Length: 278
Image (cartoon, rainbow, N blue to C red; front, top):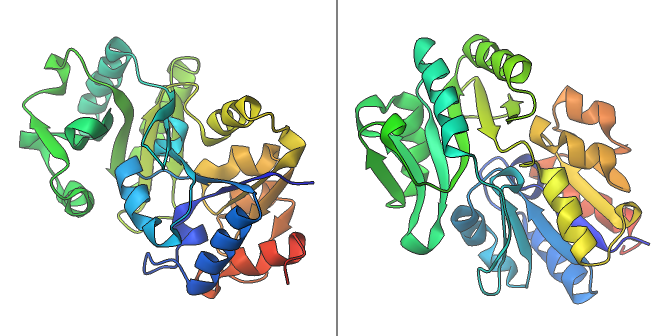
């Protein structure tokens, strides 16, 4: 019997216009009313995810920033936090500068109204697109290397796949135990997105930590997603579901691939069959 369902946002719960199809809203409400534990597992910021799912109007937990911060929607209480060590963070910045790459920082300063930090002199076209979603929850600094105290959740790079792959390979080869890196391609902002985090900052690891606290076993977890940052939770959950529109690597590790895609409310269609809610 399944007790917990972890659901990604973009490409999974959301359609390509970044809306939640009505069928998915109805299903989410029904699942929670039937006492299934629902965890939104997303690469997005907590504030952003919270606003996206507000129409569901039910209690949930949001596993944000790819598992680096987990909060309870009812009171914004932090349940799990995994920050980057400040000195380790500076190693990445120094290496990326050699490669001409300038990242955004995602931080946990929710109570101060700040989610994103950017270097004032290094804002590029990809940053502009992302910052347009950040509204006024962004802080500008002069130099990342001068930062002393910061709750850094992840370092995010946008750009050409070749550039992202070079830094991704370097980080994994040089610092496999210090950082966790995701290279995502199923996005719209750029050809590729590289995110570098705490080594324990992973959707699956944080989901498993949360489930254990709730007395829920791995075999009782369903995980649904579409992009490469969903691979571990889909591979390791009791039932791993890849969306029809998922990346090839996600589909490879999934137990089930949805019959319909995210624009057809494929999430609701598949879960209703699996949980016999037709």
